[in-house]
Every structure is written in structure tokens, then in C-alpha cells.
Length: 123
Image 1 (cartoon, rainbow, N blue to C red):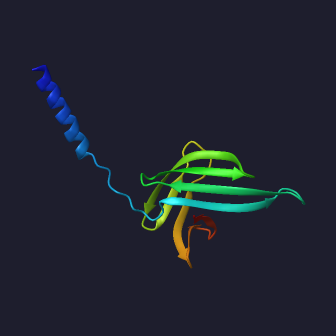
Image 2: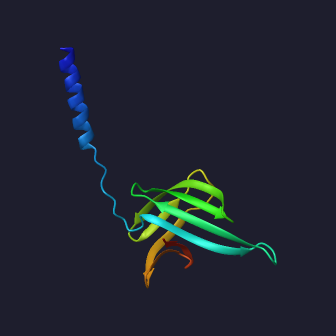
């Protein structure tokens, strides 16, 4: 009887795991996006600031900020899409949400903010 109950438990686990499939997400934003800026720190010194967003198909991602090749910020983010507008939220940080639209010009895809400024370019 004990073997029979164990067998039923195994069958139940297999059946339950097959019923909970995650829907496939093929959103075009999935991938790596970045922005590189060069800032003058003094009359002779320049600093490179690189920001990187890695979007995955579970509506999550990872954000990195490098200043002169040193990692200064690394955090997770969540994202959602409504019609053609993407909202990127950074929970646990004071970084404000980014609200962007994906646009394409000749061979370049980029995320553009409502202000018209380019947030990131697809790598």
C-alpha cells in the first residue's frame, strides 16, 4: 500500500508540473541595450559612463552602470509593455522609472524617452 501511495504521489507531481507552463514571450525588446556617454570631469580628464539593460522574457532584467570601466550600480528591474510603450521599474532603488518607446531608423533600434532623448541602443 505504501508503494502504491508513493506511485500516486509521483504521478500527481508529474501531472501538476505539466499543467503550469509559462507562456512564451517573444517581445522585440528582449536582449541587450546600452548607452555610452563621455563626460568631462575637468579640463583635461574625461570619464566614460556606460549603462546596460538586459531584458529577459520573464518581464525582468538586469541594469548595470559603469563609470570608467568600474561597476558603480548593479540592480534588477522589471518591465511591462502597454501598446507600444515600455515602463522599466527599478524596485529597491531611488532610480525613477523609465518610460520609453522602441523605434527603428536605418539599421538601428533604440529606446526613446517621451522627451525625445535616446535611452539606449540595441547591441
